[in-house]
Image 1 (tube, helix red, strand yellow):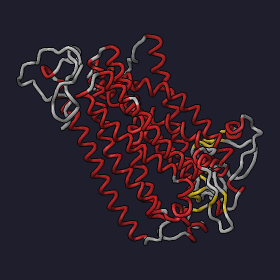
Image 2 (image 1 turned 90 degrees about the vertical axis):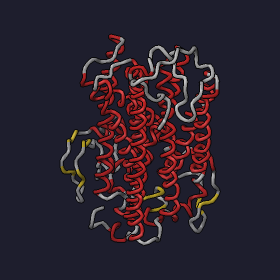
Image 3 (image 1 turned 180 degrees about the vertical axis):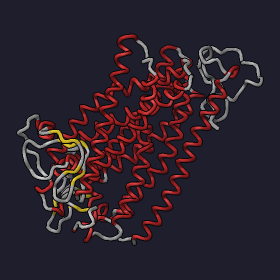
Image 4 (image 1 turned 135 degrees about the vertical axis):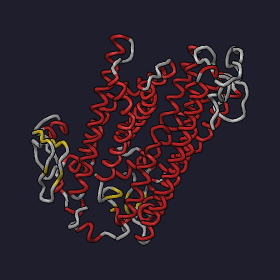
Length: 496
């Protein structure tokens, strides 16, 4: 915040640590969300390919991805539970007053979470006990459970951005709640589809990036080829779709949250022929320092005409809008997200051109270098999207109905800073353990793939991703077991 801001001067001391704590836990949790939402579908796509084409390599990939899905879900339980508690502990003013209005979204998310946990357990168990197609069809509900969880969370957040479905009584308390209107608010549709597609393309680029790194290191077998091609194709197809959805949600913000739009575009005064700024910093006098100025483009993007009037930050009192610092943060986050999206479109077009022209992957190492970075870039874009959404709404926690300062906990600031320190340490340990488990799984799988351990192109995997070893019912004809020896390793389906 601007040190001279009247908002900061009147804000309780615990507001800053409460915000920092919420921001850290949300930013950490969202790293896992793309895999949680999209990895089930990507795994099932590979699983379907394995069954349809009797492809043992695809089956091996699907089984290994299911193991990663289980580990990711376990870590997501920890980070998601912390977030759930924080809503009540850090923002009791909001939950106490508005919980009965928009809390249905959190209820849906909790129900979907337990459903997804059951479905994951069934899917993992099925590798060892079910017939192939029966097992696959029992896994099909998994992506829908993941989408249902996203539905609940986005419904709650969209309500905070455009609250609806209630009336206020004489004391200012919400009454006459219409559940349908609280869920399907004006921003719900644009936010939900933008979020869902972002999760799928991010997960696709993250998974494909792992195999792109292997490709760059000389592992150019069919295992790495297929592991790269399937998730990258999903992501590449969705990237231009996401660009269109991003434009749609920006236009929705222009109409439904004009002050947020003004903050993300650094528009100070209401006017037509408004220029677009790429990066740059908003000053307290309304000027923009630095950045690239493109005349009239903001009005054209908002309303397809340079004569489109764009509301500025000064259209509302200073206490009802983001500070110059907050506006700059939202603006940079938005521009970084758009820049990454534009670069990903170029990468997707490169891939599509080679696939259509030669029916093959691009041969340039630069393509695979870019593909290896695309996953991390996509996660960064997701983080920037949430920063834009949350910071651009300031100072409101419920847009135009409750300020963040009115919702914050009365807990002393020193205690909140202490909790933040503890949470940081715990999350470093949790994510370190998560990464350690993934690296250990990778090492075991590489050992299992080496030499006599398994001939991937000749023999379908016949054991479970983890747990007691046994035979998969209906897995296909067996090949003679390879002889034990120095080259033998643990089964690639085992998790350490």
